[in-house]
Amino acid sequence: NAGVTQTPKFRVLKTGQSMTLLCAQDMNHEYMYWYRQDPGMGLRLIHYSVGEGTTAKGEVPDGYNVSRLKKQNFLLGLESAAPSQTSVYFCASSSDRDRDADTQYFGPGTRLTVL
Amino acid sequence: QQQVKQSPQSLIVQKGGIPIINCAYENTAFDYFPWYQQFPGKGPALLIAIRPDVSEKKEGRFTISFNKSAKQFSLHIMDSQPGDSATYFCAASSYNAGNNRKLIWGLGTSLAVNP
Image (tube, rainbow over all chains, first blue to last red; front, side):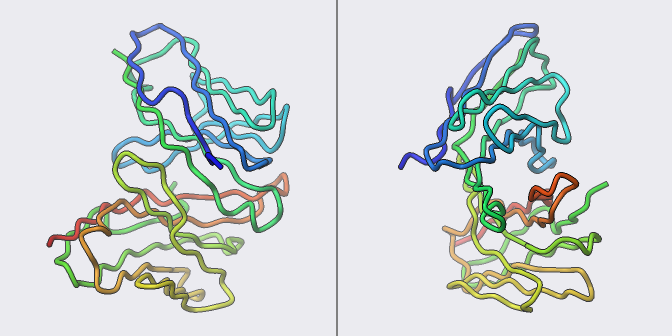
Protein backbone atom coordinates (compact mmCIF):
# COMPACT_ATOMS: atom_id res chain seq x y z
CA ASN A 1 0.00 0.00 0.00
CA ALA A 2 1.37 3.38 -1.01
CA GLY A 3 -1.16 5.18 1.21
CA VAL A 4 -1.63 8.79 0.10
CA THR A 5 0.59 10.10 -2.68
CA GLN A 6 0.87 13.63 -4.03
CA THR A 7 2.17 14.93 -7.34
CA PRO A 8 4.30 16.99 -7.79
CA LYS A 9 6.54 17.32 -4.74
CA PHE A 10 7.78 20.80 -5.65
CA ARG A 11 6.61 23.47 -8.07
CA VAL A 12 7.49 27.07 -8.83
CA LEU A 13 4.88 29.17 -10.62
CA LYS A 14 4.74 32.74 -11.85
CA THR A 15 1.84 34.94 -10.80
CA GLY A 16 -1.17 34.25 -12.99
CA GLN A 17 -0.15 30.75 -14.05
CA SER A 18 -2.37 27.79 -13.40
CA MET A 19 -1.64 24.32 -12.15
CA THR A 20 -3.25 21.18 -10.77
CA LEU A 21 -2.07 19.20 -7.77
CA LEU A 22 -2.95 15.51 -7.81
CA CYS A 23 -3.70 13.39 -4.77
CA ALA A 24 -4.21 9.65 -4.93
CA GLN A 25 -5.07 7.15 -2.19
CA ASP A 26 -5.21 3.37 -2.32
CA MET A 27 -7.05 2.76 0.96
CA ASN A 28 -10.56 2.91 -0.53
CA HIS A 29 -11.34 5.93 1.65
CA GLU A 30 -14.50 7.92 1.05
CA TYR A 31 -13.29 11.19 2.57
CA MET A 32 -10.48 13.27 1.11
CA TYR A 33 -9.13 16.68 2.11
CA TRP A 34 -6.83 19.43 0.89
CA TYR A 35 -4.97 21.53 3.46
CA ARG A 36 -2.42 24.27 3.26
CA GLN A 37 0.24 24.74 5.91
CA ASP A 38 1.89 28.09 6.54
CA PRO A 39 4.26 29.04 9.39
CA GLY A 40 2.32 29.85 12.54
CA MET A 41 -1.02 29.14 10.85
CA GLY A 42 -1.31 25.42 11.43
CA LEU A 43 -3.27 23.30 8.96
CA ARG A 44 -6.07 25.11 7.19
CA LEU A 45 -8.72 23.17 5.29
CA ILE A 46 -9.17 24.35 1.71
CA HIS A 47 -11.73 21.89 0.31
CA TYR A 48 -12.88 18.43 1.14
CA SER A 49 -14.92 15.60 -0.36
CA VAL A 50 -17.15 13.06 1.34
CA GLY A 51 -17.38 10.82 -1.70
CA GLU A 52 -16.85 10.45 -5.44
CA GLY A 53 -18.46 13.32 -7.31
CA THR A 54 -18.87 15.51 -4.22
CA THR A 55 -16.85 18.47 -2.99
CA ALA A 56 -17.32 21.09 -0.29
CA LYS A 57 -15.59 24.27 0.83
CA GLY A 58 -13.34 24.37 3.84
CA GLU A 59 -12.20 27.45 5.73
CA VAL A 60 -9.92 28.95 3.01
CA PRO A 61 -11.41 27.97 -0.39
CA ASP A 62 -10.92 31.22 -2.31
CA GLY A 63 -8.63 30.93 -5.33
CA TYR A 64 -8.86 27.14 -5.44
CA ASN A 65 -11.07 24.60 -7.16
CA VAL A 66 -11.28 20.84 -6.67
CA SER A 67 -12.66 17.79 -8.40
CA ARG A 68 -13.29 14.21 -7.29
CA LEU A 69 -14.14 12.34 -10.47
CA LYS A 70 -12.75 9.06 -9.18
CA LYS A 71 -12.93 7.82 -5.61
CA GLN A 72 -9.17 7.40 -5.33
CA ASN A 73 -8.21 10.82 -6.72
CA PHE A 74 -8.72 14.36 -5.47
CA LEU A 75 -7.43 17.23 -7.61
CA LEU A 76 -6.68 20.74 -6.41
CA GLY A 77 -6.54 23.47 -9.02
CA LEU A 78 -5.16 26.98 -8.95
CA GLU A 79 -6.59 28.90 -11.91
CA SER A 80 -4.53 32.08 -11.51
CA ALA A 81 -1.78 31.66 -8.94
CA ALA A 82 -0.95 34.50 -6.53
CA PRO A 83 2.07 34.93 -4.23
CA SER A 84 -0.31 34.49 -1.25
CA GLN A 85 -0.77 30.89 -2.39
CA THR A 86 2.87 30.10 -1.70
CA SER A 87 2.54 27.30 0.82
CA VAL A 88 2.93 23.61 1.50
CA TYR A 89 -0.15 21.69 0.41
CA PHE A 90 -1.19 18.45 2.03
CA CYS A 91 -3.76 15.96 0.91
CA ALA A 92 -5.36 13.58 3.40
CA SER A 93 -7.94 10.83 3.37
CA SER A 94 -10.06 8.99 5.90
CA SER A 95 -12.67 6.30 6.12
CA ASP A 96 -16.34 7.23 6.34
CA ARG A 97 -17.07 4.55 8.89
CA ASP A 98 -18.14 6.58 11.92
CA ARG A 99 -15.19 6.89 14.26
CA ASP A 100 -12.71 5.57 11.70
CA ALA A 101 -13.37 8.87 9.93
CA ASP A 102 -11.51 10.60 12.73
CA THR A 103 -8.12 9.28 11.62
CA GLN A 104 -6.75 11.19 8.67
CA TYR A 105 -3.87 9.82 6.61
CA PHE A 106 -1.66 12.45 5.05
CA GLY A 107 0.42 12.57 1.92
CA PRO A 108 4.01 13.88 1.89
CA GLY A 109 3.05 17.36 0.73
CA THR A 110 3.66 19.64 -2.24
CA ARG A 111 5.81 22.72 -1.74
CA LEU A 112 4.50 25.47 -4.04
CA THR A 113 6.20 28.80 -4.60
CA VAL A 114 4.46 31.55 -6.55
CA LEU A 115 6.77 34.32 -7.75
CA GLN B 1 -11.75 32.37 16.20
CA GLN B 2 -9.58 29.41 17.04
CA GLN B 3 -11.82 26.64 18.35
CA VAL B 4 -8.87 24.61 19.63
CA LYS B 5 -6.20 26.70 21.34
CA GLN B 6 -2.76 25.11 21.57
CA SER B 7 0.21 26.24 23.64
CA PRO B 8 3.08 26.83 23.65
CA GLN B 9 3.92 27.69 20.07
CA SER B 10 7.43 26.33 20.52
CA LEU B 11 9.25 24.37 23.17
CA ILE B 12 12.86 23.40 23.79
CA VAL B 13 13.82 20.69 26.29
CA GLN B 14 16.89 18.66 27.11
CA LYS B 15 17.06 14.95 26.39
CA GLY B 16 15.25 13.07 29.13
CA GLY B 17 12.96 16.01 29.95
CA ILE B 18 9.17 15.85 29.90
CA PRO B 19 7.72 18.36 27.43
CA ILE B 20 4.05 19.15 27.97
CA ILE B 21 1.83 20.62 25.27
CA ASN B 22 -1.59 21.93 26.19
CA CYS B 23 -4.83 22.37 24.28
CA ALA B 24 -8.13 23.93 25.26
CA TYR B 25 -11.51 23.85 23.56
CA GLU B 26 -14.96 25.38 23.99
CA ASN B 27 -17.30 23.15 21.99
CA THR B 28 -18.69 20.46 24.28
CA ALA B 29 -19.82 18.48 21.21
CA PHE B 30 -16.22 17.44 20.57
CA ASP B 31 -15.91 13.72 21.31
CA TYR B 32 -12.50 12.73 19.98
CA PHE B 33 -9.14 14.35 20.69
CA PRO B 34 -6.15 13.20 18.62
CA TRP B 35 -2.55 14.34 18.56
CA TYR B 36 -0.63 14.32 15.30
CA GLN B 37 3.16 14.36 14.92
CA GLN B 38 4.86 15.95 11.92
CA PHE B 39 8.53 15.60 11.09
CA PRO B 40 10.19 18.16 8.80
CA GLY B 41 9.35 17.55 5.17
CA LYS B 42 6.66 14.99 5.98
CA GLY B 43 2.91 14.99 6.40
CA PRO B 44 1.34 14.78 9.87
CA ALA B 45 0.64 11.32 11.25
CA LEU B 46 -1.64 10.22 14.06
CA LEU B 47 0.35 9.76 17.27
CA ILE B 48 -2.22 9.08 19.98
CA ALA B 49 -5.88 9.90 20.61
CA ILE B 50 -8.38 9.91 23.45
CA ARG B 51 -12.15 9.93 23.84
CA PRO B 52 -13.74 11.88 26.71
CA ASP B 53 -14.84 8.82 28.65
CA VAL B 54 -11.31 8.39 30.04
CA SER B 55 -8.98 10.84 31.76
CA GLU B 56 -5.66 9.45 30.59
CA LYS B 57 -4.22 7.33 27.81
CA LYS B 58 -0.66 6.07 27.47
CA GLU B 59 1.10 4.67 24.44
CA GLY B 60 4.77 4.07 25.08
CA ARG B 61 6.37 7.33 26.18
CA PHE B 62 3.39 9.43 25.08
CA THR B 63 0.51 10.22 27.42
CA ILE B 64 -2.65 12.24 26.90
CA SER B 65 -4.25 13.75 29.99
CA PHE B 66 -7.86 14.84 29.55
CA ASN B 67 -9.85 17.14 31.84
CA LYS B 68 -13.45 17.20 30.66
CA SER B 69 -14.69 19.76 33.18
CA ALA B 70 -11.91 22.20 32.31
CA LYS B 71 -12.21 21.41 28.59
CA GLN B 72 -8.48 20.89 28.36
CA PHE B 73 -6.20 18.09 27.21
CA SER B 74 -2.45 17.79 27.10
CA LEU B 75 0.33 15.67 25.64
CA HIS B 76 3.23 14.55 27.83
CA ILE B 77 6.35 12.98 26.36
CA MET B 78 8.27 10.97 28.94
CA ASP B 79 12.06 10.61 28.68
CA SER B 80 12.11 12.76 25.56
CA GLN B 81 14.67 11.99 22.86
CA PRO B 82 16.18 14.07 20.03
CA GLY B 83 14.15 11.90 17.64
CA ASP B 84 10.97 13.35 19.17
CA SER B 85 11.85 16.75 17.71
CA ALA B 86 8.86 17.54 15.52
CA THR B 87 5.76 19.68 15.27
CA TYR B 88 2.82 18.41 17.31
CA PHE B 89 -0.79 19.25 16.51
CA CYS B 90 -3.74 18.70 18.77
CA ALA B 91 -7.19 18.42 17.25
CA ALA B 92 -10.79 17.83 18.23
CA SER B 93 -13.56 16.16 16.29
CA SER B 94 -17.34 16.13 16.23
CA TYR B 95 -20.20 15.71 13.76
CA ASN B 96 -20.91 18.67 11.52
CA ALA B 97 -24.29 19.84 10.22
CA GLY B 98 -24.11 17.28 7.42
CA ASN B 99 -23.59 14.45 9.91
CA ASN B 100 -20.00 13.99 8.76
CA ARG B 101 -17.03 13.98 11.09
CA LYS B 102 -15.14 17.27 11.20
CA LEU B 103 -11.65 17.70 12.64
CA ILE B 104 -10.63 21.08 14.11
CA TRP B 105 -6.89 21.65 14.43
CA GLY B 106 -4.72 23.53 16.89
CA LEU B 107 -1.97 25.72 15.43
CA GLY B 108 0.85 23.36 16.36
CA THR B 109 3.82 23.28 18.71
CA SER B 110 7.37 23.02 17.44
CA LEU B 111 9.33 20.82 19.84
CA ALA B 112 13.12 20.61 19.89
CA VAL B 113 14.83 18.06 22.13
CA ASN B 114 18.49 18.87 22.60
CA PRO B 115 20.98 16.02 23.04
